[in-house]
Amino acid sequence: MANKRKLKKAIDWMTGELMLGCTMAGQTIKESSSEDVARLLEKILRLQGDLRCRISHPEPGMTQKAYFKALRESMDKEIKGILEELKELK
Image (tube, rainbow, N blue to C red):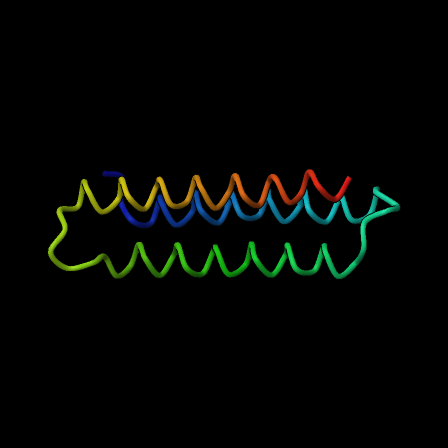
């Protein structure tokens, strides 16, 4: 397992890139509504906060390897969902 600080930085970078993509899509796609873009940005910010919190406070009773594997799978699922919603803005 990488240390928690590196994981948090990776999450910050990833969510920053998602927010940049969402903002760029909102600026360049004329058909996209500002409410949809704002909703996606809010969803990304909630994901960032949730993931950072889950890294700092792992669930008791789980091994670290199993916990962080489940965290990674959850993160991948959420990111794919956000990317699908971002594609729908077009």
